[in-house]
Amino acid sequence: MDFLRPATWEEALAAKAERPGAVPLLGGTDVMVEINLDARRPAALLDLTAVPGLNAWEHAADGRLRVGAGVTYARLIAELGDVLPGLAQAARTVGSPQIRNRGTVAGNLGAASPAGDSHPPLLAGDAVVEAESAARGTRMIPACAFYLGVKRSALAPDELIRAFWAAPASGPQYFSKVGTRNAMVIAVCSFAIALHPRERRVGTGVGSAAPTPRRAQEAERFLAGELDWTGGAPLDARVAARFGELAARAAAPIDDVRGTADYRRHAIAVMARRTLTWAYDDYRKKAAECA
Ligand SMILES: Cc1cc2nc3c(=O)[nH]c(=O)nc-3n(C[C@H](O)[C@H](O)[C@H](O)COP(=O)(O)OP(=O)(O)OC[C@H]3O[C@@H](n4cnc5c(N)ncnc54)[C@H](O)[C@@H]3O)c2cc1C
Figure (tube, rainbow, N blue to C red):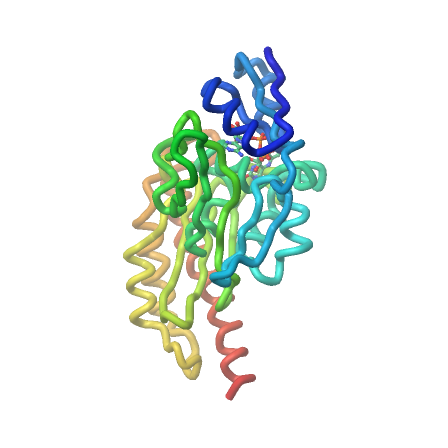
């Protein structure tokens, strides 16, 4: 197995163009497990950890955050937890401290597992993946167009993820995950919500309950129309229940070793109601403070 270690981003893109089969490596928390288990034996590894700038994040001119592919979960939690609270909450549930010290959102995107924890908040928060190739330059892929199938994404073989973009939260965001135990666990299913008060819009992400992570669009539209955006009225229990039903309806789960399809649908409805309740409570408190 060849080990390629580009010293610049341009060298990395050139190496990926020349050897599209080379497997990119950031934290290695997916790649090295697969190699150690002999589930994958690529002809080449493309180690991106020496590429300068990949582990930086910045406020872009349009107000969004541009988070480099090499920013670890641990740093995301510590440095961006207040501005990307939904994603940070999901990041806190990933693996163990050791995994969070190495693993990255970009690696989660690269793996494109339906169970990846960063996907629901990326969807709920309208994140965009910045991909680049030597031949075609930069391509901005909205998270909702990124996931194509089980462990399949919109990335072309010669493309690398350079960063992801997300707007700082303009309203409450929450993530919830059901596992077979409390820590170090792959999601049986998961759910993320983001309230976007400026546009009176709701974002959602459903994880581990379909071949790809996906939004619950009917649930989003329903809730956007029903929520009291003044924050004056308490959450109507019937609205919360209907939101849960519609979120569960967006799922297309299977029975597998981690859970049954029925259980997953039920759990999505519960998590949708719960995260909405938490988010709307925060929203009302903020509205009351500002009144
Ligand atoms: C013990 C353990 C517990 C775990 N727990 C969780 C969990 O709770 N939740 C969860 O979601 N995941 C979990 N994982 C999986 C893994 O940690 C995550 O998917 C993590 O986000 C991977 O990030 P990484 O930087 O380590 O990726 P890597 O392993 O380096 O790469 C992952 C994939 O992305 C590709 N890739 C990497 N960088 C790029 C790039 N710049 N451009 C294009 N493709 C790229 C790689 O080729 C590979 O296919 C766990 C793993 C372990 C070993």
